[in-house]
Image (cartoon, rainbow, N blue to C red):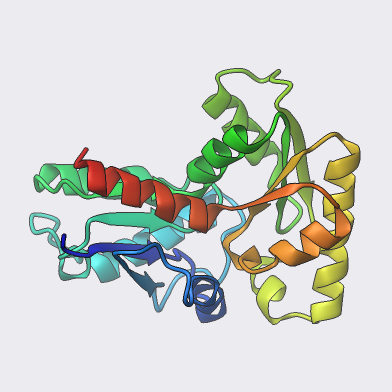
Length: 239
């Protein structure tokens, strides 16, 4: 029997409720032969809403996982085969952490849930859309998808629907209100032609059933789950 693959799911914001939602979504359903750990920094922004909060969250994670001396790997990183950055964006921690691991000759991979989710969505259906938190993510996510697909005019992507609800409120706000905005966003993307709806925020983990009820027939992609599966494949392949 091979040794268990160890992955660390990093929620780069400081909201314990988001990390708890991620952990709960994997309860009793982790991939076989995989040990998952979940972590978030004690300091830094409670939610990531723009480039500034992304940088601040990167600094907070770096300070706690690695510390001031980046000549050492960092105790927070030891023993893992891969790291998932659970923020639905091109978060700067992804490239910074991968470069750090490479400098220390680590074969561990770093993956963002944004890239994992899009990869999964492309395999599931002809067209996909993203439902996300807050109000200001549409331009950045649209640009990120265009960069990933290699074209700003791909007919595979129907667009982004922002719920107007912040990251923390998605987990700690009124459940009925959150359910309603998720259902509304799902219906909007369905009308636009989406056959796949991507959960564009780590705080949305576990909300798949709401989307399926509101948009009958669509497939739903949870970026955290997609990211874990991809990291497991990379670790087992030894690439």
